[in-house]
Structures are given as structure tokens and as C-alpha cells.
Image (cartoon, rainbow, N blue to C red; front, top):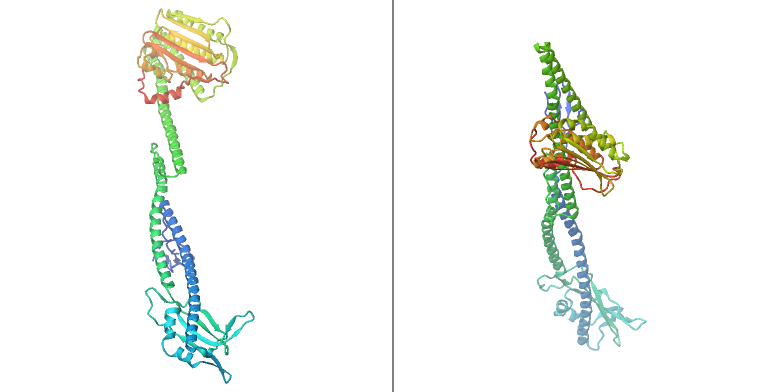
Length: 564
């Protein structure tokens, strides 16, 4: 039978960690490894930062608290041992005074048959009554051992006691202890001796105090408990502070993550909001850089989308422009294949119309090819320093016959002195030719078209083409350099154009690092002004005029006029 697999990874040819096995079909056995689950670890930055902060505080308290308690213990022990030594000295002095006042001039210690013996009065004083208990409780305040013995004088003149173990009298202090005090065996016993220079038999006594009555242990317990309470309070405060600080640190990161997620999901308007008082300088700088990146990304995507829409419109316009002559020729061919093909006059008319449509198709294809090359940067200008007057005059003369046929006055006013600039003569002639051709197209009979050339202040050239035609509507001026744009005020002239001439003009002027401006009034004509620098390879600072592409991008925010 087939077995069920437990959680974890499997080792087919090894024993399972938990000993679990599964049978395969055919009698083969298969062992599965069951791994122990990993301990749950907080994964959020805020939780880890809080735990780390609290752990640092806890470790610090755990390391410092024993040190503090140990140092306090040493301090209290030294104080108690010093006090015990003082008590031992006082006890020995007081006890010696009692003995001297009781025995008077008699010997305290005597040598009887070679054995050191204690004066019977002293023995009675030590064994009878409560003298030792009183001294132990009031003066020594500890367990006491009194040892008597003979005394001898050292070489420095100081008397020292020779304690005799057989003459020792221990006293156990059994008084009622005050609250908070208790015998302390951890205190080192203190010894003190007193020697008397008796005329017959010098003697002395040695007092040893131990287990003094102290409050050291209870004080340490109280301090330890207080430190523990303070440690708990410190940890609790650390948790609160760490949570607050971690929240302040993690909030910008969370906002940045949320904004990144929204951007990844396609919401390019997502931004990180950062209060001035929250977050660190590095996080604020990171948020600002993210917002800058998101803004630029949004702008780039919007440009790509607009270019995509423009490309769709461009393809639609190209299809429309190409379909018109193709449809016309298709109609002419169908007519020629019918009865009209046997009529010589009709056949001649249809063939002439087809030839005209072919010329229009060839002209349109050439303009599209030129514009595509200009926009893609495949056309490199052949810049040569030459007199621009010849280029302008040649372009004007090419349209002289058209102007005369339409009854339009075409003039060219050129300077008497050479106007030498670095330019590509064929391309600049194309600019002038397109502007003059446009002016003739939109100017009626008995109208005028004037072409003027003059030097400008920077050493460049200024070319003006002025006509007295129908003019351009103010709403159409921002769009006249767009491809296939022929205006909303459709008329016969606009209807026959392709809408590519001015786009080509603008591209060529931009390649020369020049500018082109338009002034027009409805019914009063138009004025095109082309300003070219002296040397396009080293352009001077000029007012920025939008290119054809950037003009379309900026105009998306304004209502565009409908196409004709």
C-alpha cells in the first residue's frame, strides 16, 4: 500500500529521522526523513530591532547586577570585619579591667607544679555570674572565646600574651537579635590580646570574636531584590522604548516597501511620505531618491505611452494617406477595364489621373522616408561654411513658376554682403522650399510671399518667410509641426497636403541647432522665422524651443485640435 509522506524532505535510501517508513507498490519500502520544525523567529525588522534592543539591555543588566552585588558584599564585609576588630579590642580591654579590679595585686596566672593555673578569683569571675554573657552581648556582640596565659616582653619592649588552650572560656551569644540582623559566619574572626606586666607574674588574655551580629546579609538580600525589581522595570521600559524607536525606524522602511510594491503592481503614482521628524537622515535621503526614481520612471513610462499612441496615430495616418491614392488608382483601373476603356478621351484622363496619384504616392513615400531618417538620426549633415544666400535664392527660384501660375507675387530680399554660416545646403534648401511651398499653397491669387534673409547679432542667419494667406488659427499653432497635421479649419489647400512638410522643416532646423517661430493671424497671413547659428557644432545658448517630439509630449495636457 502507498504511504503518506510526512512534512520535510525525503531520503529514499536512508532512515527517516523519526523512523517513519512508507511502502511502495511491489513490496519495496521507502523511508522519509522528518525534519524538526525550526523555531519561530520574528522576521519583521521592527520585531528584530525591538528584541535586539531589549536583549542588549537584559545582557547589560545580567552582567552588571552580579558585579554590583559582589562589590557591595566586599564593601559590607570589610566594614563588618573592621568593626569586629574594634569590638575585639574593646572586649579585651574591658575584660582586663574587670579582672584587675577583682584580683588587685594578686597574680592572675601562676605556675603550680609546672602547670599554668588561673587565679581562683578569676576562675570564679569567668564561670560564675553573667559577666562574660553581658560583655559578649553588650560589647562584643558576637560569639567570644577568652584565653588566658603568661606574658613576655619582646625585644621592642612590647608585652605579648602566650595563650594557654587549657585556660580558654568560650561564650555563645544568645541574645535576641534586632530586626534585620543575624549571626554572620562569613565574617573573618577577629583576635585581640591584652598583656599586663605584673611584678611577680606577667599575664595576658586573648579574645577571639566570631559570628558577629550584622545586617550585611539582609541588606544584600534587600539590595538584590531591589536590583531585580529595577531590572524588570528597566526591561519593561526598554521594551517600550525599543518598540517606539523600532517603530520610528521601521515605519519609513514599511512605507518604502509599500510604495515599491505599488510601483511593481503598476501604480506609478505611488510615493513615500516622510515626516520631517521621523526616520533618520539616511532613510529620508533614501525615500527622496525613491520618489525621484519613481517620478522619472513615471515620466518615462508616460513618454513611452504617448510615443506608442503617437506611433499608432502615425501608422493610422500613413495607412490613410497611402490608401487614398491606391484606392483612386484601383478605381481608375476598374473603369478602364470597363466600357470607359474604349473611350480614348476617358482613357487619357484616367491615365493622367493615375499618373498624378502615382506622383503623389511617390512624393509621400519620399517625405516619409526623409522624416524617418531625420528622426532616427540616420541623416548626417554635411556642414560647410558657405554663403547661405545662394541656397535661399535657389529654393525660391524653384517655386517661381508655381507662383506665377497662381498669380502670387514671390520676392526674395537678400543682404548685399555675403551671409556666411556653416550649413548643409541641400537640407537648408529643403527648409526654405517647404516653407515657400506652404506659403504659396495657403495664399490666394494676387497675394504676396516674401522671403527675407539677414544676419543676427550672434553671427548666425535669420530667414523669414511671410505670406498674406489665410493664416493659422491660434488653437492650431502648437500642432502645426506634428506629422500629418493639417488643421481643423479644413480647406482645399489643407486637404491636398500631407502634413509632413513642416515636420521635416522642424527636424532639419533642430539638426542645425536652430529655432523656428511662427506668427499668424486669421485672414492676415503667417510669418515663419528660422534662426540658425553661425556654427552648429558649437551652439550658443538660445531660448529652448520644443522639438517636434517634445512638443507633442507637452501638448498632451492641452486639447489638441481635431485632424482634418
